[in-house]
Amino acid sequence: MGEHSSVTSISPLMATYSRFPVTLVKGKGSYVWDDQGNKYLDFTSGIATCNLGHVPDVVKAKVEEQISNLWHCSNLYHIPNQQELASILVANSCGDQVFFCNSGAEANEAAIKLARRYSQKIKGTDKFEVVTFEKSFHGRTLATLSATGQEKIQHGFYPLVQGFSYLPFNDIEALEQLYELEPAAVLLELVQGEGGVIPADADWVQKLAKICSEKDILLMVDEIQTGMGRTGSLFAYEQYGIEPDVISLAKGLGSGFAIGAIIAKEKAACAFDPGSHGSTFGGNPLAAAAGLATVTYLVNSKLLEQASKVAEYLDTKLEEVKTQFSFIKGIRGKGMLKGIVVEENALQIVQAAIANKLLILTAGPDVVRILPPLTATIEEVNQFIVILEKVFQGI
Ligand SMILES: Cc1ncc(COP(=O)(O)O)c(C=O)c1O
Image 1 (tube, helix red, strand yellow):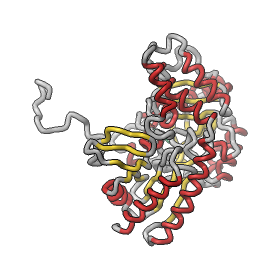
Image 2 (cartoon, protein in one colour; image 1 turned 90 degrees about the vertical axis):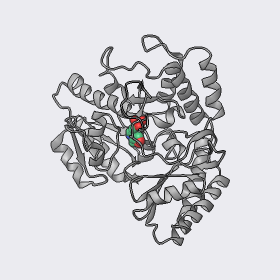
Image 3 (cartoon, protein in one colour; image 1 turned 135 degrees about the vertical axis):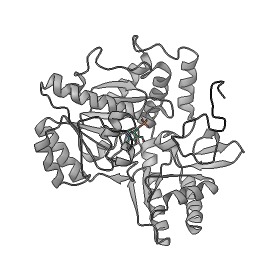
């Protein structure tokens, strides 16, 4: 308690999170342990972040090697891990250049800044609008909450940053408005995560990409939740037959170390020149070591193939569970990003799951979100289904 504090009974932490009554102290693979020694099956992956499971050996080894040498030096100097990580991201995506930052919101901030810069510096227009979609989630900074198509995220933070408009998601006809709006960019999630695990329709995405290409509107995909193998391919856009101009990443990129990035095609990337954008920590030697080990493993191992098979099995099992409980309205999602649509009781289900030593999430009041690590096994899925059925029986 600070000497000058006049309040004696409040938490030293601001109340930004309503936390579950669990204190986690250890993790390995698909499991975490609390401070009482209880073991939980973790199908949240730290909100789509620990895609290789907790404390994966390949990442641990690389981070341990780096931690003995150099943690931080700033971006005034060359950072080999960063350089190598950028090369791998470029080699495995449709992009040409990478900018590193520390989080998803910062990655989207960079994307929004790049869109404005591209429009004003490269195209020579005064356009700055970015079109996003209803129910989207793009972050908590002022620009990214303004980009987010959910009023509850914006409430109390007015005035918003100007230059965002929201179109209905998966609505082909609404895309015609882009001809009139002619924004600098469009920013979308290919599976809306926080908004309720809603996959974009392929024909809608393809029409959107076609309009963007015709009108030279930057097509920017927010792959912060869907990227790094979460939906079955390294990036979700690969499943849509499109080539975005900008991809934003964070979460799974560092397996739990704070690192974010945008990958952009050269035509847009060249809008950033020295002094136009930056970050003290962005892609520092330690975070870049975690990112490098993570992405190297994702592209060189058979993990994505294996995860797709386990995800298919999970789908089949969830469909079986659905037939037993009338309050389940549907199962949706892609790969290891699944939503169980329920009544307005998602939180109650998540709380009951915790009591049964299973960690899962909500995505709004009526969707239970399941985010297993990509390393999850068939046996772990079976264990998950047994607990889930028990939880549902008690609801
Ligand atoms: C799609 C998407 N974009 C952006 C963010 C923001 O990322 P961060 O919390 O790292 O700022 C999130 C986080 O949930 C997300 O799911």
